[in-house]
Amino acid sequence: MRQVCLIVLVLLTIAAQARSQDAPPAVRDSVVKVYATYRGPSFDRPWTKEPPEEYTGTGFVIEGNRLLTNAHVVEQASQVFVQPPNSSDRLRATVSAISQEMDLAVLEIRRDSEAEAFFAKHPPVTFRESLPPIGATVQAIGYPMGGDQLSVTEGVISRIEFVDYAQGVGGLRVQVDAALNPGNSGGPMVLDGEVIGVNFSGIDYAENIGFVIPFEEVKLFLDDVSDGAWDGKPRLHANGFQTCENPALRDWLGLSDDQTGLVYRKISARDDVPLQSWDLVDRVGAYDVDNAGLISIEDGLRVSWATLLQRLGQGGSIPMTVIRKGESVELTVPVDTNDYEVVLPLGNNYPEYFVYGPLVFTKAYREMGWWIMYNPDSPLIKRGDTTRTYAGEELVLVSSQLLPHPITKGYEIVGNPLVKSVNGVEIKNLAHLVETLRDLGDDYVEFTFYDRTQETLIFDRLGVDDAVEEILEDNGIRNRLSPALRDLWPED
Image 1: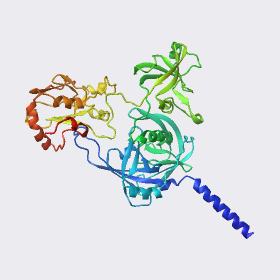
Image 2 (image 1 turned 90 degrees about the vertical axis):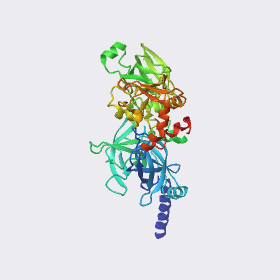
Image 3 (image 1 turned 45 degrees about the vertical axis):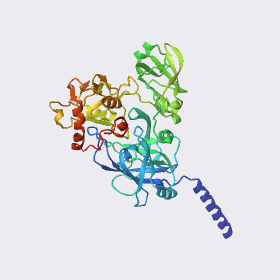
Image 4 (image 1 turned 180 degrees about the vertical axis):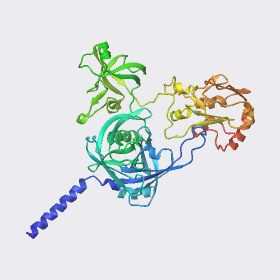
């Protein structure tokens, strides 16, 4: 009997070892604390950066000897460190890929020797590839404020929706009632030992409402940045969709009760988009679109039809069936990852700039929206969300007040005026401004602006050249051009 029990014990031990080899690695061992020194951009003094601020967050190990975290944890960071669990060591890391639109970033440990030792002890997590079921119990693992030790909080999946993330990019988002606090950002949300996604935000004024970036979004990001750069999600370059719930609208369109979908009114669209005004988007691929613009995906989950842009549009187009004047029409609608708006986001970079005498020029960036709103007369308010009228178009503005020097006597800058022309040459972009001033041979330089309240500025060209070094020195400006523009201006 004793020998039988011993044999059974051995067999159970072998079986347990086999199960442990197949089981996903312990997620807790793969979670790190992230320390970042944030240096934000200065839009009014673009040659410098904002004072440093220290932030902490969470990250975790993924395949390829990498770590995953939120973009907002490490964006514009001058230095990043990761601290392994149960350790006081801080390892220097770098941001190898980032998408601020989807709030995701990949980190790599800087020193090969440290990376080898770290990843030998901390294996990658296992992702759950399907969306989690509503009501499932999950655990948030991370380093929230209030302590230095790893924290685990529990909650349930409340809902899954397709929502706007940032900068015009949308995606699926999981809502949980697990407590997510500052510092949890970038950590894993776990279901039965598998990671369902990345914790990325909560709501300050609500209790126990947090949000998770699900695996589908994470995979799209990781596949995109496999070459080191975030290209973006497929976009449909057409505006003007509206729901088709109103009875009068449906009668006017001559729709039967079983014809559902979204109505398209052509507000704006690229020339290659085959949709016409008053088309009813009935189906996208094999998915029926209802009158609220929702489709049914796995487990009966209903989300916005825009989910299909990323699911079906990786090849550069999506199939659509529309009802046009009572007839069913099959369309192939092109999509791409380009952003054609004239004002683009700064992203994880710093503003480009050019100092010409007392004037500091920069591009208009989407993040400047809050900054220039005090000048409602600026054309930037009207142009900020419009598409480029030609390739390479940028809005060039004066980023600050005139730098002090006697040659500015009697002049002032009102707000942040947009540059219209230099000596009659209409300015296309910041590089074009640099080239125009570089090649100028006239005795005087005339700057005109689109803003009605801004006066025209005229300077003696040689006087500006003579004043440059003094102005740069007085204002602590090391370089009169940002790195991307320096090749356009000859060294003195």
